[in-house]
Image 1: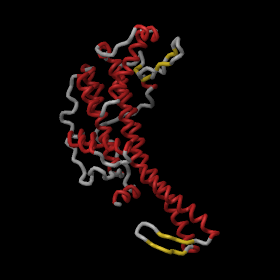
Image 2 (image 1 turned 180 degrees about the vertical axis):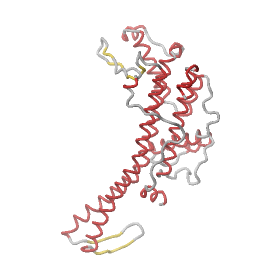
Image 3 (image 1 turned 135 degrees about the horizontal axis):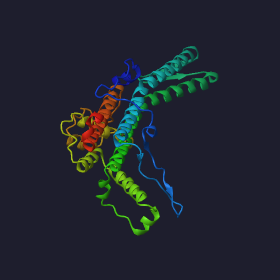
Image 4 (image 1 turned 90 degrees about the vertical axis):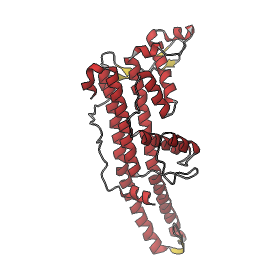
Length: 320
């Protein structure tokens, strides 16, 4: 109940990013990140290739554009919640007031419990009262579902950011493609037409393979390819794992705690909530979303920063 009241109030303005300075750009395409939408081959099939920087764009600018777009999207989602919640709260209040007027004027309360009332209405007012009650229930459900939905969207934005970052790394470090263990048949090479198309296909499949892994294994892959320890001295890591695992719960079990959730959290030294027992349902309130927003932005920006400095040690000022 306390969390529900926190969601409904929404009195405090959303925080701004205080961990990093972010300079937004207008769009990925304007900053040179272009997506090859594919080419039609002789057999009529269309292959989509991984997004990559423009040939005339430096990779410094490419990584910067990926980070800027990510931060912009995350902040847009973050500031949406209190606005929508206040809007829904206002509508809910108006409908409740209208229902109360009809109930007080025409209804007869038959039973009152802690969470509901049984009210009888004359037939000429029954349909109107039923419609108002249904709208109240729908609004209450929307207010309950919105926060976990936005949490899911935030983590999805992080996943999209990571996919684009890995694509940029591949195109900036061609030797990573050469070391790929993926193989193509002669007929597949003929279908692609050019080595560049085949290379794009391998990158696409490499990214798909990484993104199918859990978030911890994705960092394992990055550390192995880049040759750096990315999680040392990173206090936000346990929070990041808990956030992504909670997203998985809401995606697959409507927030019901699973054994896997607890095992993954323990493995990464997450301070699990006392009420997070198997079979219990977790919640997401505005305070939790603020923390999730800060954590996801911090992890993403710091990751891109380390990658940028690693790829271009002579231009660390640009990365910073």
